[in-house]
Length: 121
Image (cartoon, rainbow, N blue to C red; front, side, top):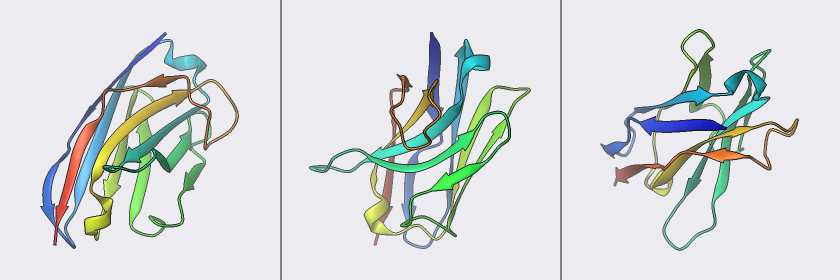
């Protein structure tokens, strides 16, 4: 089992920045990927970014490339998502996830409870 807890969400104006964090506990040494997903009201959950735990290879949705950066701290079992130049369409609940599969976009096996990000125009 892997437990995931997100933090760092909030309200920010368009063009601003936020940094999300995810603290992982449990059998994290078995995780191949950790990722961020988001779900806006009335929309399906979508992939945002992923990082391969062992070699820190990173993957991004086209909509966030160049503005978002995913990173992880292996010693602390934490993952972060630095979000810059935020747009109102980024408003969503952001979820941290962990995968034992070798596919960055899923499927994922464990999920956090989510943290709200609201970007005002």
